[in-house]
Every structure is written in C-alpha cells, then in structure tokens.
Amino acid sequence: MKPIAHYMEQTGVGTAQLAAASGLDARLVKAIVSGNYTPSPSERLRLAEALGVSVDEIGWGHAVPVEHLRGNGPQTGRQT
Image (cartoon, rainbow, N blue to C red; front, side, top):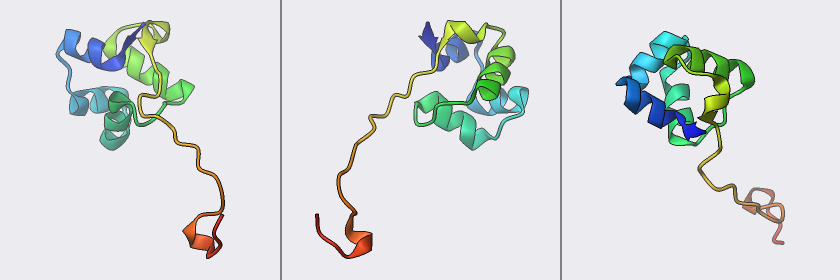
C-alpha cells in the first residue's frame, strides 16, 4: 500500500484534477493528500476510481500526529 500522492505522481494528476474527477471539494482532496484528513469509505472509493486503482492499494493513514491533551483548557477559565 502506497500513499495517494504516489498514485497521483504516477498518473500525473494534480489536486485540482483529482478533485474534479472524483467530484470532491478541492480543499478536502488537498487535506487528504497531505495526510491531514482521513477520508470516509465513500470518499476513498471516489478517489481510487478517479485514479484507476483499487481502494485497497492506497494507504489512507493519517500522517499528522494526534496530540492528546489533558484537562479543560483555557477556554473554561480553570487550570488543570
């Protein structure tokens, strides 16, 4: 399994072209390609079909680390 950017590079498809071919919003496609958003199963299918590959061939992992924060935060006015 390789990231979606690999298949885009192989086919010479840019973010805007992939968005148009898949029918998804360009900002959403950009977030998916950069690893900032993990697509839903239907979004995965649309992107894979637009690239001409199987959904199982693409690695859909989230590339940006998720930080687990503790406490209520400054918005509540309480310190933790």
